[in-house]
Image 1 (cartoon, one colour):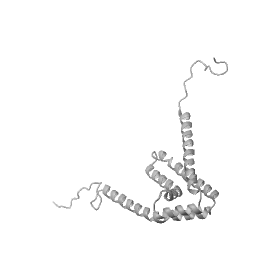
Image 2 (spheres, rainbow, N blue to C red):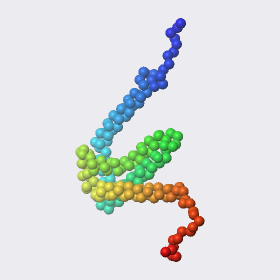
Image 3 (cartoon, rainbow, N blue to C red):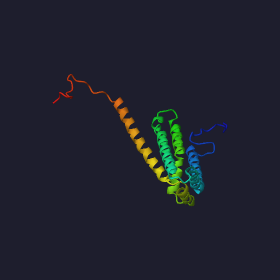
Image 4 (cartoon, rainbow, N blue to C red):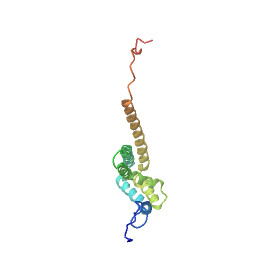
Length: 190
C-alpha cells in the first residue's frame, strides 16, 4: 500500500497552515496599524493646511467666514447623513455588506471638511493650535458658523426623516373599517 493517499484539508485552514480567521485577524491588525500611522502623520500637518486653505478663501472677512462655515457645516453634514440612510435598504441586497461599507466610507469622505475643522477646534497638537491662530486672523466666524451649520443640518435631517416616516406609515396603514353609521362631526353635530 502506498502512502500517496491525500489527506483531507479542512476548509478553515489555508495553504500555509494558518486558519482563515488568523489571516483575517492579521489583515485587520495591519490595517489598524496603518490607520494609526496615517492619523499621526495627518495630525501633524492637516489642521494647519486646512486653516490656511480656509483663511485664503475667507481672507479676513467675518461675512465670508460665516457664509463658508454655514455652507461647509450644513452641506457636508446633510449629505453625509443622506448617504447613511440607504444602509438600511442595502442589507436586503445581494452584496449588501459591501454597499454598506462603501456608503459609510463615502459619508466619511464627504464629512472630511467638518472633521478637519473639528481637529482644529478639539485638537491639542501644535498644528491644531496653529490652525486656531490662523482661523482667528484670516477666517473669523468660520468655526462657529460651521458648528451652526452642522446643528442646522442635523435638525433639518431629523425633521425630514420624521416626516418621511410618518407619511410612509400613513400610506401603509390599513384603512379603518367602515360601519353602517355616518360620523357625527361637523356643524350639525352636538
